[in-house]
Length: 474
Image (cartoon, rainbow, N blue to C red; front, side, top):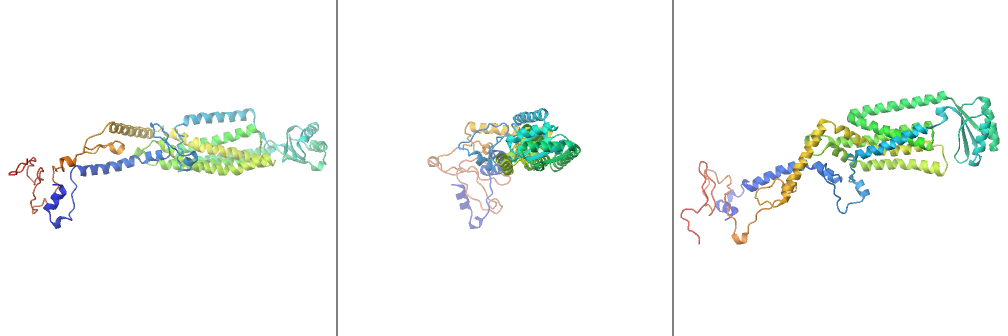
């Protein structure tokens, strides 16, 4: 007789609506499953986030999933799986080589400063490339020290010379006009003193210093001092790379160059703050949960904001590239090429430093803190224990009616099954009583053969066996 039949036989309709008290093995397993499921869900929350982004947990081996989506699809969904923090050593080496090349160019080639900074005289006159050398030679014969001679805009010759007095300046105007075959009135001379250029340089350096101090204060207060260090290193990288490329190409340094330089520093800072905000969100409360290391959380933030950084950089680079390559290169409009070059190089360098440089620097600085090192040890210990438990559960089936606690972490549990057709229904060892049946006024119910009635208070439990007076079955 089953438990349900026993309950139905011993109760009338008044007891049908009473609640059943969960007792026994199944109830224990249900309670244990609920408790462990809640703990496992909290412990695996950030592990799932790493897996969704295509990132391996620390110490885990990366395996390429079959039929993986394209790179564009994974970038759009934040699942690129770039191990930026884990490959910080390689990133530092590549960045160091690039920075050293730029510094060498600045030291050995120098800059082509415009007259706004160096002082001197300039002469503009109509002409073509074929007239460039005769005009330059005529200015030199007139007593001018020609620093540069170039064709701008396709039909204008620009001469830059050292500082000249009024008599020498008039002589140079007449000489270059005669060499170009034009009237002296078509030559436009311009004179800039060295003191005025020095004032511009001092103001530019002061603006840069104020900008960097404001950036350090903001990041240290909004986030933490180590993030301010990472952002400043990224900004210095952008400055050095942009100045190095400018020196290597040899474009003229003008006030427009300084304006463009300050512009790209603001853009680079914006992109870095976006990444740092996501890093701060991922690492908040990380020490109490011990679900992933600080570096893993920071790397996850980089992957989650990667597509936004790429979209922002591409949208900003497209019009600048049109101004630089189409305007200055194809159409010959060279008046804004100095601004276009500094913006193009600076935007590209800022995107690189925000993604691949700023966050790894902060992660490496944080890994030196004792609290972060302790967090790493706890995370690795938890994952090692889970891996061992999963390996034991996967080694072979476990014949047990109890719940294996490793099952929630990937192990399987094999329950012993009983052939109901051959052996008949299983006879219960313990009869589950409802609250109504254990009361003082509850009627006594017949105990099924082979089962043991629940002992009354104060009564010693008896072994299961045949009831007195029962006939033996053949």
